[in-house]
Image 1 (tube, rainbow, N blue to C red):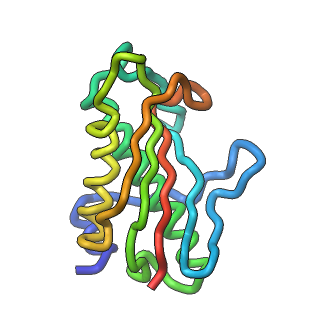
Image 2: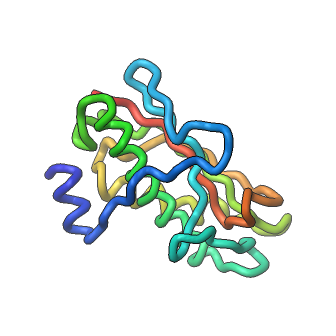
Length: 155
């Protein structure tokens, strides 16, 4: 099944690539690797503000990480098209790095990040399984609850 058929089955529409909020690019291609800059969680088009362990539950954080995955795939699609292919041209999601805005006692960053990892697996199948890091941090730009970056490889 194609990536686009899976997206349709999940009733997901990918957003356009977001305009960077500072001095960086949304993605860079180096050889067959695509490096996507960190994307913050958004809700209703605005930063999804919150701190895990204080104002948000693990399940809310997981939903935020899933929303980030959708935005990442929108940027990934743009990067693929610039490279002359589409999402079906992704050989593998190589690595995901997640920053979770959390209290010093919150220890479920890995469960929050599953919201992103599991969706990538649903959409890309075996090619969506990846290496991963999940960190708890004191703050994320704009007070967002989650920020995730991604590395993918083109076929």
